[in-house]
Figure 1 (cartoon, helix red, strand yellow):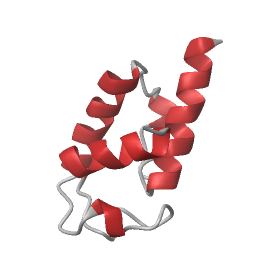
Figure 2 (tube, rainbow, N blue to C red; figure 1 turned 180 degrees about the vertical axis):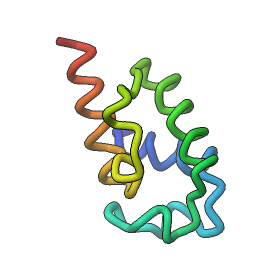
Figure 3 (cartoon, helix red, strand yellow; figure 1 turned 120 degrees about the horizontal axis):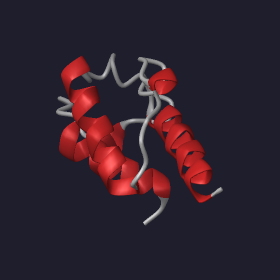
Length: 84
């Protein structure tokens, strides 16, 4: 499973979206699609647990979780930093 597919699965499990995650384009605004602040925190915790990363305070903002693409880029950056 690719990074993006895994993120979509976690979003489906923890995002509590009223629309199927599979129907969302990578750059669709997740907040417009129904992602709440509470659900974004739940998603962040699931991402940290699954990928064994920790989101730094500088990434704890709406922009980081605005779209599947943004989340994929953030997790990719954190994963690369964890390996380095």
